[in-house]
Length: 184
Image 1 (tube, helix red, strand yellow):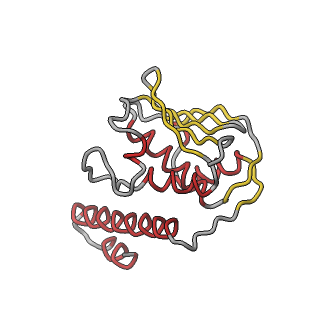
Image 2 (cartoon, rainbow, N blue to C red):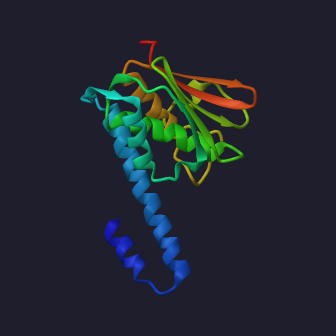
């Protein structure tokens, strides 16, 4: 895929170049997501929890998202917790990506304290229970911009940490909550 992306870069026809780059990027995303799913569902999955601050994990999340945090509002009471430094940012990235993607104003709010991490966004309530969306490859409607793996990955990572993923809809907002104080 990387070689094909480099070759596509040399094409003179801009439309063809952009279409190929988009297709190769999508293939790359699919492979990465499937690799993450495979890693998480493997019977040999190990997480390596280390003491870390939430702000370090949040900053790592922003690095892997490669977005301008202008779409994010935060209310963070920094705290230390035992967490896998590579997996938890993936879970947060997926929740923040979904919040921004499905919100009419393309913004998200992150509230965090030692009890819970909330990712909040404007929008319509979920049509099905959270358990429906945390199954692999489930989507409310077929879209070309997702694979139906985001919340499955989030729930798997959260559960591997012994935390609980919850959802509520209140005041026109969707709340996806990682309950740190609730052990499963």
